[in-house]
Image (tube, rainbow, N blue to C red; front, side):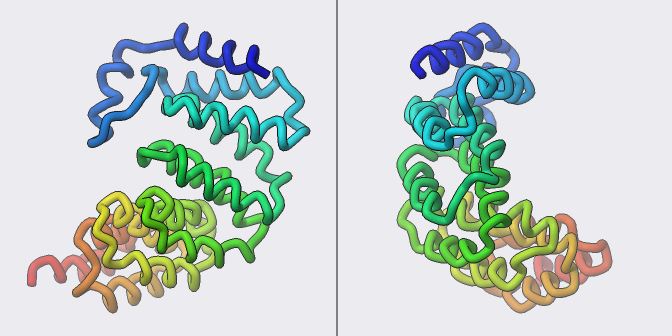
Length: 238
């Protein structure tokens, strides 16, 4: 399997883009490790490399993904996230513990968190709805990226109108979280839920408007119908 990882690293090095390399750091407040490869190229490399091993063997994929996560490099983590999404139909509930461990140990910026959780984790939860209860346990983690993951893993399901009760429960627990990346995470989750449930999400926001941090509040309102958004924004004028 080492040859697969070596080929990925070489392909990433070959495709470093000077513009991407210069602009990449401005998206992060903390120092991140990266090559500087455009996301579309990273996906292409992920797709090509996915053909070079037996992806039907889940444990093989898991071993390779863990090694990619261990590198700490954003693009390698994104490749792992793509692979995991492509095999997400094979996941069983017992695999959730491994995902939590990966997030806790290796995820150290919002981009890695979201790339893994939006699609691979979102699909996992959709295929095994009972696991949404485990996400509520993630909200108590001392690691802010595990807490963010508890929300952003529901972005795609929320967009489709699912798990509204659990979305509100997770938002309740994270409501006063002091980390702004966590605030943005649950605010984004509420925003996506508002696409299918604008009235219920609006009511929730209005009930929490006095205590919800402005960061989460503004994220949650972004896709709200204009008339409801205007009413809610009156909150900021008081």
